[in-house]
Length: 222
Image (cartoon, rainbow, N blue to C red; front, side, top):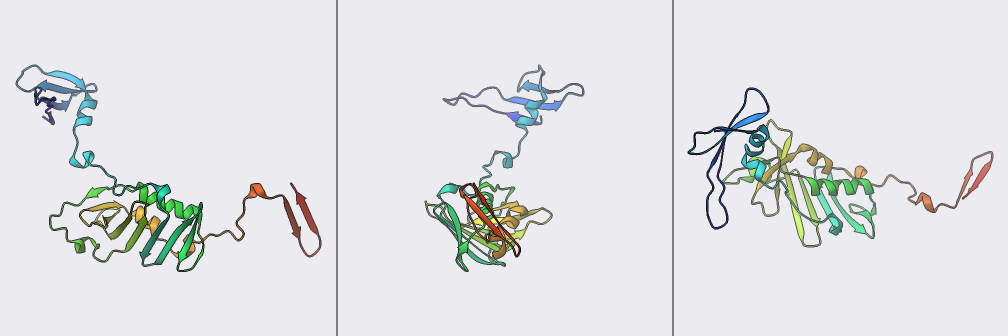
């Protein structure tokens, strides 16, 4: 059989094992039978696809859990520099290397990238030699102050033949790989993090605009 399903009820009583075979040549069905019986039944082919899984399918792909709204500060250290970002009130600011207003969309997007990143591969390495994955000297280190403690995330080498990079957390107990786009989204320079607004203000609160050039001027009132 393609799949053998064994179900045990509360109290330890087992149900007869169910064997799921191939799909039928015609129609959207699959062959099914109870183990030990000769009668072959037909079931929807979706039964086979829903049961024919790998270990990866059952694993929780979440690498790090935290509440985005609880994060008040995070930092990045990589080839493009070392940056510390802090939330003051409802806005984000760059604290290091110099104090200035941050690009709000960029900073929130990076935070969402960390929050939403999922494991694409789980490294099964009993020795867990971090050097094999470029995690002994990571290309990028991110630190989050989550409100419940400090969490570190390390990004290493690319996974050979895949559009992925290796990742581990501060505990360094497990190594995962995530899409390389996660690394690229976080590997920013100072220009990307800076606010590009010359004069930040709320358009809804503007009551008067005055414009002058060399020849004339205008005044617009709301």
